[in-house]
Length: 381
Image (cartoon, rainbow, N blue to C red):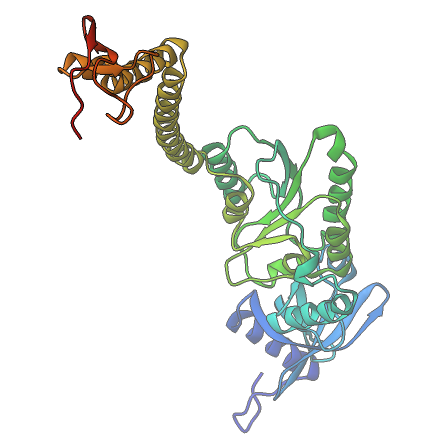
């Protein structure tokens, strides 16, 4: 209504209703709001809190019906991102943000990450020395991830391409919201069935998402479960730059879900190439060894031929022949055949000097083909 001065005139109720109508027409029905939680408190099931930044503050409320649906319950000092809308109560001209959804901001996630790491580090759960080696060629593995998802499809395709001999047991888990207890429960079920299924490793994977979405994997209880797992654990959570507490306690942290499968399963193409190279090398070594054995056998055969009875007899015959020739060359008969004669006295002794001989002594001349009886006519010195 208008007054006599031309200025609009309102009752309190009319003014508040006008403000409410203006807000409804001029403000988005839903919006994102980032701030820090201050003085959260429950009243009759509703969560009342103040959202603040460095310069301002505003009241907010999560109605009881909506609070049970939230995946995250904020605490004092938590940075949050709110999906909300404005509530204006005309009776009191009271403005409030009605929270439709709530999730931690990156600052709160990082504080939670640092807090859990500070608790686990003194116990040695983050030490590299406690990490176990992965099986070389696992017969069966359990894959805990969201079903269905593009990350799961990529992991299964990679597993088939790399090593189809490994059985991959897909275990669906929720990965969004306050689902840590469900993940821990599924992990306990897998560990209980590990012996029956022949499991040799466990993969915990989640594709994509912001760092805030990965906050569930910063849970201290989940981290302790992974550290106590009797099987090697491989994590592939989020993107390459994302690191969660689960990654730190796992036996192997892969940059992505697909990289987790690559780290766990051998590549059959690479193994085939390696086997071909080893087979070629083995053939070369075998060929070289056979050549060495042939040469050795040839040498041994030559040695055996040298000690064969026929060879020994032949060599002995040759030596005897040489000795015979030597004996023949040195024998008196050989000298006689060359024209020499052997002179003996009447007593049959070989005469080597004229001393003792005198005229009319009888002597015997032995030639190559006979003997001659002779008488000495004279002796000349």
